[in-house]
Image 1: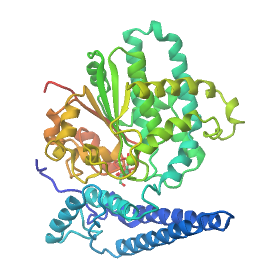
Image 2 (image 1 turned 90 degrees about the horizontal axis):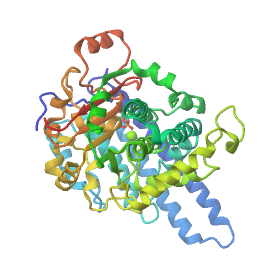
Image 3 (image 1 turned 60 degrees about the horizontal axis):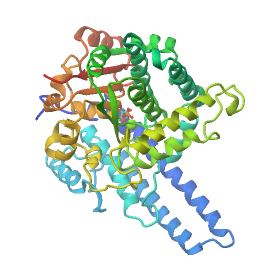
Image 4 (image 1 turned 180 degrees about the horizontal axis):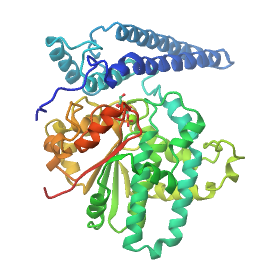
Length: 474
Ligand code: F6P
Ligand code: MG
């Protein structure tokens, strides 16, 4: 499948791609360098302690400094529009497909940081960073974004407790939930899961705890206020499809760890516990640190542990100690239920729970390749076959949306069905995306023109969202 439009790239200085190369990537790269400096510093203090394995720690520090140097060089080259270098053979996934594409881009003279297609260059960046760690002895399972992910998650306590309380109240009504009430609850759940995507660390680099609370506010009023920002709203169609199922299977192609993953769990829990329609949920993570905040297999297990650790969630701003905050008591039974679902397979990670960082030779590697999803059947036939068994595949977040649509310059009023190419006839698809990149489809021309004229950066500022659904039998 070839899209009839070119991909977004930073040669257009008014696009978000340009801003990303100039501003956002350097910030992200610098944050890795800073983190490594802190970690090497801590290791050096540890090595001074009596009984420390000095030789091992010193070797690790030396390797750490090597990585810092390599990443600093990358930052230098990026700022000066150097060509993208080959990914070293690190024994992990997709080295040759990335490098072959670099070759093709070089022959068209669009292989530098300020000329390469945005989607490709951004995936390449995270895969290249992974290679710097993968080839080492001591940093092989290191996730440079982990401290950021954990700290933002621990500041999400207020919304997490609010949601836990709502779920607890639902428990009391469980036996009397009629179809109509379920439909109303479904709308709340899907919107919570949608706006959960707003907590994205690669975009929101300077947020205070108050900002995070505001962003995650989940009450009915907050939802109603945001309704006008949902530019494409297929909620009713999704519900019609889901409520036609019996013991169905739903897949989540995950996006971010922390609060967003929590909302994915809640949505999945709602479907499995409170409706007869779904009994099995698969979660698909990324196998390497990806776009800063995406869920890896270690994040998945850690999330459940963190939620059960009473000291993990920081008290909400302006309130007292954690355990006295309303909602704390409601969290544990809910998360224990999820744990139980994981243990008995009602919730499954698509790879073994103890999968370490790095490829594992499975179909899951497709998620960290640079290719649009319309290539899935050819490039990841096993994955494609497995998803064909699903009753609904939910693609979370912005990057998944970019990959669904190929990140090309579709007019905004292009049908979602046309923009995702052959995937449209593959399996029922739901994309829940808050908009943080230029590509948008499925919005009527009048709305798109009005927003374009308004001067607001509506495609990329994260205020707008799209709920795009394609059901079966087309
Ligand atoms: O940096 C590019 C980008 O894809 C943005 O479009 C978006 O802000 C972010 O990375 C990823 O967002 P998400 O976590 O929703 O996929
Ligand atoms: Mg993400």
